[in-house]
Image (cartoon, rainbow, N blue to C red; front, top):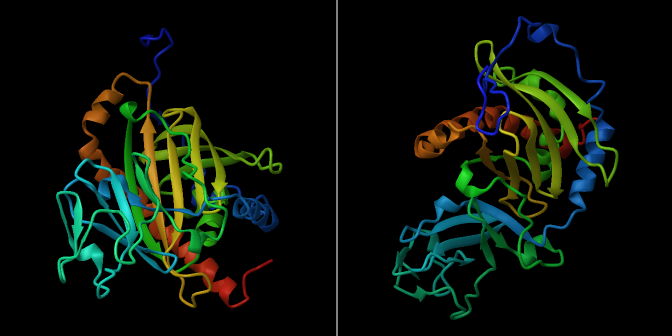
Length: 336
């Protein structure tokens, strides 16, 4: 039996799953997925402070010397770009002169230059244009919008603990659905649906511990990620909601322990909009203590599109789930 460098017994990363029940023969989970339990977890998440910080996109979406990056957050146009030194800059997305969309402008030597009449913004207040607080955590970029959040502002967003950047591979996927952030969060706080709704990705899913309250607020799940055919990767994972628009999945045991999946729900429309739209910005930060993982890090540019494709397949289904939840809520037909 081979030994690892740390002296522990080597085990293969993949397992061959024995023949098990097919999709229809697996045990039903609807009794465990109690609506009140999910609603309580969602309520606790909604009361946690965000400091008025919203995820805008991936850090790579705003490269040095690249074009500005624009998004509407809570009905407010936002534009981000980088200074010549690489520092993140951000502010209102409309030019203070005649309202041109600054996301379509150019960045020249770290200065944002409007493409309508050449008004230049270096990220400091000018002509009624005032910057927004922004933050780059190395994977995601954030903006603080106090008028949208309506909370006590904080100096920095609450960024979940992640594996060290020099030992991990990260990827960010973004999709947009017709729903509100709470519908996205509620979807993630229902782990029972995984092997029913996503049998192509998850099998043998068991929730081994439910939240017990504010001090013990994690769903703990044993699940196998399907790789190909009967080859799977079994893990134990925890689902928590550290903020009102964020759900964190962390692998605690098994292959890739310490890896995280951060699901951030960013409202694009203002509160109370009759046709709400929400951006799901999901960051996967994968790590492994296996020696061969260095090859994965070297191949990160090739792996990232594959990671985004995997996330996209899941969110194609889960956004339909979230949109259905909103449609039922908005017409008073949601159970409970």
